[in-house]
Length: 255
Ligand code: ADP
Image (cartoon, rainbow, N blue to C red; front, top):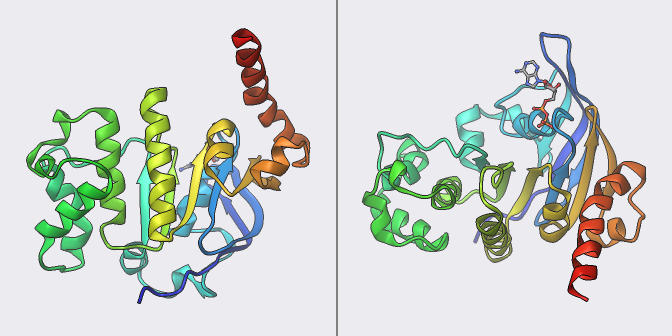
């Protein structure tokens, strides 16, 4: 039996960098276990910093982050990170390792046996041919590389998936396909997913709930339906206006 899904909670979380920048300025919110939440906002609004405090790539200056009520700093970071999948924008595959070795890194660190069959299973999961395990990362397209990044993030069967602009460098068609694939994996694997994106259209199409960040604070928190109905507040309205107007212009062109 998989362990039950836990809520991820932020309690008065702050982060000020040594430079004096207050990147996260008092965030309190609870992300329900099993939900798919998008964190949207302009560049520099603190999204990445907030995300990286969950798996302790960044330590908060104040406040508390808990998973299922247990503070994330209750165990050493490497054990915490086994339970949290993390996908980042530039993928970060090791260029001198094969695709299979890249996917298996977390498994190797965890001392897992029978890694080859698990790698094959993970590649199938992200719709890549098993034979790709033998390739080097530079022999893959950007979209394929990001699928490998997702396979690697899911290798140790985490229940929580953090994604930091995972589609940022991809063309729109690949981006759309990968977004749907990730939403599919979220649903079938019963994950809790936190996706950082600056793209409100992507957030509306993929997430159950959208958090809007501005200057280190959450200034909007609503479902896509409420956001589209104009119930998300001023900051969210401004971001929703862009894809809405584009959709209207396209619809007008098609008439
Ligand atoms: P976002 O992900 O929304 O683009 P970030 O969390 O990356 O925002 O950054 C929030 C703020 O913190 C920005 O002003 C950024 O310049 C600053 N910042 C991010 N990382 C560092 C760092 N390592 N040192 C100093 N300032 C940083």
